[in-house]
Image 1 (cartoon, protein in one colour):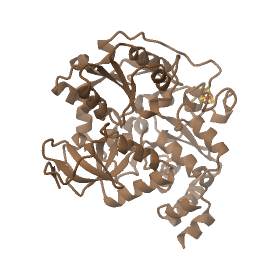
Image 2 (cartoon, chains in turn blue, cyan):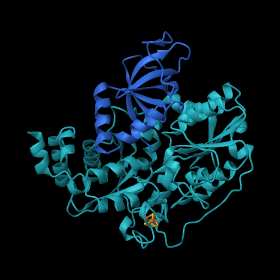
Image 3 (tube, helix red, strand yellow):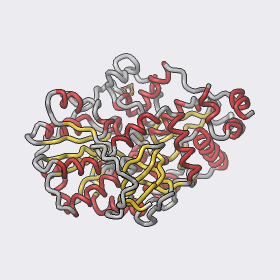
Image 4 (cartoon, each protein chain N blue to C red):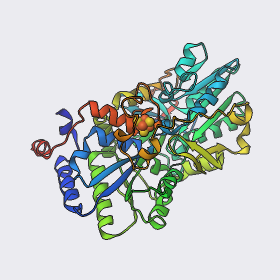
Length: 102
Length: 379
Ligand code: SF4
């Protein structure tokens, strides 16, 4: 329930400032950046994600730690199931589209 | 054991364990509550109890939102699922949670439109994609999850989306701690504060625990080393007779929290005068409802909800376990009438509940961390 999943911002949506394309261990989904609007992340930044929203910016080392913690807790499958589920219809965004600002 | 290699800084974990044993005054008994269900899970999974001396006891707190949700709220939410053209959307964690007439999954099997969503934003998307239907998001969670629901409602209002509503069960952690601290049989000495809730609310909301109740609080991360370091910080304070709020999880938690998230919650929610917690009863100002300005998106204001109340059997001792007066296995129903398959009380309902964690890990050997293994892993 209270999983926080680390992901890396790949690109920002040029049509919607609160949407970003985020990579979580190779799975790419749209994540909402609305809760970080005071200091918006940019491509290359790492964030902690909870229920489809980026909750806080973290360092790359902390992202690796968090992934390892999820692994040790046996929660990686649940976390990846959650990430894959974002967006309902699996509309996997195409990062090469001009919509996404890398 | 494979996991041992993956612990961050195993030699530091071993040192922290030694430091705890050195700090623990043999003439004292320390009772520390870890508030968050995620910490409870980690403590069992990593067998952290093995590293603690007998007089340092961990009590598992109320931090599992699925566990503390009264069954009547599930019944109320599901009563709407039978309406025509209605979609009941909830997180996967809710799907197997029993209501009086079955879980959301069983309602789905009976032909009602019940959908799993992984984000409140996806419930909103369901509403956009199904304009001929009404989509109700059954919202649960502490302040970690509440800002995401709030922002989703702000978006729904901005779009004037008419076929979307939220059945709000969001709860607030500090009033539950107040209920535990104010109980006449209070036995706790200090608190391991929740990590992810604190990314949103920051550390200030715990100041009264230190200043009024005189108990130390250390906001903690989730790795074994984080939890042990937090225990060291708590024991140092207790031995020095201090009570402060400290932040062990600075790399993720800012002292003032996440202002944008707090603003979103402030815009959408207000406190209910009281809310029932399974195992703890009615607690004043312990949950959110939608403000009048969001009435159109509030399922409880928009539809007629029966207001079901289901009380747990008298024999269930969840309250005593939550306050640390009893250990899970000391409840008279534990493992007999009450199991994770057939939960009677709140704390068996989800794997993060303390009775379920105790039941599961009592039968399953946790990843134990002996100092020998650490030393081996360090080389
Ligand atoms: S065993 Fe069941 S009834 Fe007893 S405290 Fe735990 S959850 Fe409550």
